[in-house]
Length: 441
Image 1 (cartoon, rainbow, N blue to C red):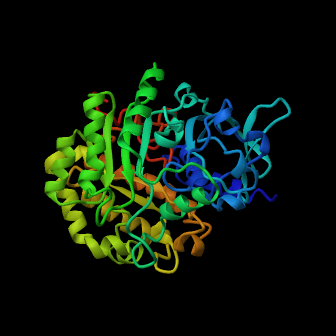
Image 2 (cartoon, rainbow, N blue to C red; image 1 turned 180 degrees about the vertical axis):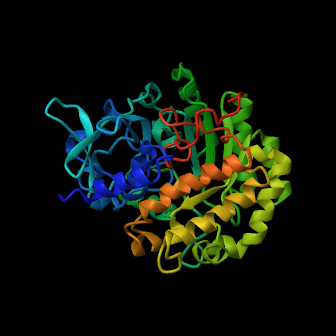
């Protein structure tokens, strides 16, 4: 190979020295994926490595049938990068499989895993050990990994209690989201993939985690799933997601930090979340630009509307406290063809405008690095995703805006700072200073 990817990465590290070098590699792996040699795959739930759980989206650059052996023997949930010629500090990266990626995880002659770029070993790779709680099943035979998988190196229990979204079809689905396809592909492959998780199953899985997680590594849980425009099991969105929180908090008071990802709901609904014991509310605004929100989130625009969505986010700060309202956006879709910005400058300016809007009210958004999944309209049209430079400059703009408004790193995300962060689906926590957290965290 000609080493062109290495040259690009090194150029960006040189041009943006205040962005940790670890974050540059992490963003490139998240935006473009990584290939796995057979030697680096797991033995699924029978092995010693914690396998990828597909906890909500596929986060892959191919459908399961296109992933080859990686569809039969799952890759690890995450990898840790350390050392190598760039002397990388410990960096946790969510695994997004791309057989065509210039990055490859493989074993060397001594059987030690490494990350290779343009044929050169650039980091040592650690894989998550199979947690003890994954080795136990529920009384009905279901696996803990299916009901209550953990991510972020065990920090977060991810409870996707509704596996599909009621925004359905081209006129309603968010254009970057493959939650509905991911459900379909797992069912087609014969994998267990529960559509609506029973609250008693969730509690039983949490009991197993609590019993065997003796180090108390799991610190938070997220309740999430697809948008509910009507009802599920006779419950509206606030009551559906909220009744899981109520049950968890009654059974395990203050064992974990409770978070819920839901739509931006009316204030009375938001108060119900709070009353049920939820500590942190994620009413994700997805993309800032007004036109792009309408084009990329047609269901959210139709049912709620961008301006009302933003108003509800600000209103919810009066219930949870501004620090505990943490809306996500999908970093990179700003540059997706055919509607997105044509230059990195324009995209960063727009996204920073959104950051300033929320941070000026004490609300700290966070972001997920866009993975262009191939079954989505934006993934099909933009298989390369957004340029790496956009992601690096976003990290720079994000930290600068936080500093401008004197904000600390958001709660429920583990420690900030390179070498310390565990948040795995973007580098925003890696790019903050280690002292960006408040003393209570």
